[in-house]
Figure 1 (spheres, rainbow, N blue to C red):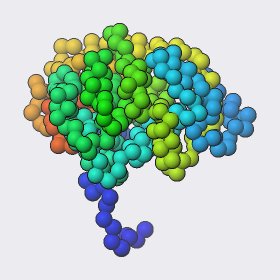
Figure 2 (figure 1 turned 90 degrees about the vertical axis):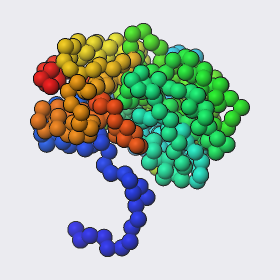
Figure 3 (figure 1 turned 120 degrees about the horizontal axis):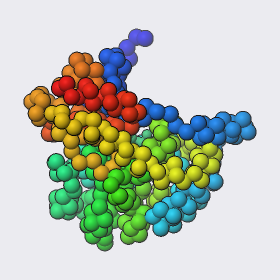
Amino acid sequence: MPEFNGSLSSKLPKVGTTIFSVMTAMANENQALNMAQGFPDFSCSPELISLVNHYMNKQLNQYAPMPGVPVLREKIAAKTEELYSAQYNPDTEITVTPGATMAIYAAISAVVKEGDEVIIIEPAYDSYLPAIELNGGHPIFAELKYPSYSVDWDEIRKLITFKTRMIIINTPHNPTGMAFSAADMQKLQKLTENSDIIILSDEVYEHILFDGLEHQSIARYPKLAERSFIISSFGKTYHNTGWKMGYCLAPAKLTTEFRKIFQYMMFSVNTPVQYALADFMDKKDAYLELSAFYQEKRDFFQKAIKGSKWKVLNCQGSYFQMLGYDKITHEDDMDFARRLVVENKIAAIPTSSFYRKKNDNHVLRFCFAKQNDTLEKAAEILHKL
Ligand SMILES: Cc1ncc(COP(=O)(O)O)c(C=O)c1O
């Protein structure tokens, strides 16, 4: 293809390919264990696959209603009420989306205007920043405090100005595995009361919390919920990240604006998969037992690397384990992660890639949503370093 000759100035000049794609490509090239990108290496429920097949054969293959098929929105409403005692109206407050990433983009686009400030707490999932910038917003950066990765609410209070339009939170947290406590939520409530600040709460790991911790959904806090978009992902819950299915909960006024954007980005989401998910949501164990399932994997992995030089950081939720490598090398995390793939055949994510300023605490993120065999092989490699 001949090169485009016209002038073109990038709308995102500093953005390249995401680190997740880069590390996965490197892992494939080097035939390395891919502990980098956040996806399971085991299959999703065959029953769920049969349900999709069933609805495809039933000829439910045309456009779904824009906000999602009613039965799925009703099931989401029922689940949210049962788990978090919050009532969301399926008609006006719940939208089914093609994964969380698009929902995040639509929520930010729905409310952030030129010059608005949006507070991001780093390390942060990488889709927030470009979404803010493409909408003319100014990202304002707070930081989780290493090594506990706790939130410094005083710091956030100082960052709030009359231009603050949105605060983005993520619990349980990618990449650190930290989870917000009830005290965190109360502080957030105090900071935002009597303001116009909108909260975007990324809760894609809502069903993966360890050691008896409860997920502190925004939905549990009516005074926060009334100003919040809550985003969830079926992909994380049902081991099928490739299906890209999620949803957004928000009060009607926010949902109206969200849908104005969503309808022109996507219009609607895969119909047979929505019907299948609606049926499958009746099997509550699939999400209620997810924490125990992943806690076993976390514990298995932690035990397997015991005695190695890696420093195991606290992991309260999500399927990511942060490992410090100060006792192994002083290389920066990007160089070390690249060397690990090429020389040791294991891929992880350098944590600096979750920071705008590339803060480097010599920590790599490993995804433990893997079969125990894979975790064992990973531990074997990590012991050799
Ligand atoms: C914190 C966080 N938010 C959003 C997403 C995106 O979820 P989805 O695959 O449903 O778009 C991910 C995926 O890794 C994530 O870790």
